[in-house]
Image (tube, rainbow, N blue to C red):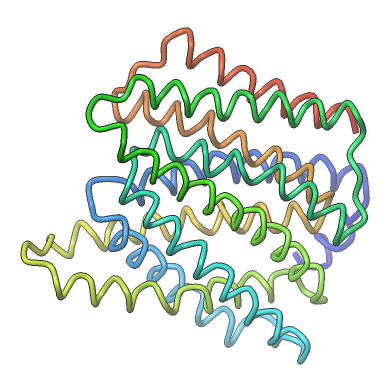
Length: 300
């Protein structure tokens, strides 16, 4: 599998596969976010998810894939720190605000800074038409967040803090996307990076979640929580694994922009699972997001 992946780098077929992977990551990331923001405390949900994918990855990292090269350990350390800050910020964001408002903001901050970061780190450069596509996509994402905020019932003043936290989280989305792309390109075997990523990344949040669980007066049942964690852990392999493989096969900036169509999938999940109304306004913003991604993809 690794040899096949490596043979596709920089090819037209690799570009097409990266497109599919990025769109798959978009859907799965929206589902992952909905699972974390669901009926359980976001901290507990994330801890259960990380525990699940860390446990599954451990034997693969230790006994299946090739051992990481010596220079990879410092890269894994940087990855661990960046993802910890991202996950703490994400949990705070979900604690403060409604999913349909904060999720588009988080995802909207990502592509702009990732495209800039990819230009600095990897020498990638968008055309004027692609930048226009990014602008259209961001208009759709932030328009969707703003519309959801206006329709929100209750104390909107709390949402100001939630949106600011979501913007901070979005900057770390861009940082981890760029850094992970650098990491997966730094090892001979991409699956070595993926296995060790999930193994190392699953170490901290279960500890934080356990401490939070012990302090709770009304503790939730562990069986439903761990089932959600297992489902979320499996979803995470596609959500994060697909986008990392996409950035190995093709341009980081394009993959990041396509992944942010997750805001469309998040709105659809809210409609189907949470019984939220879509309406013509939301449909219009979702169309802008999709149109922006199409412009970026076909203006390359």
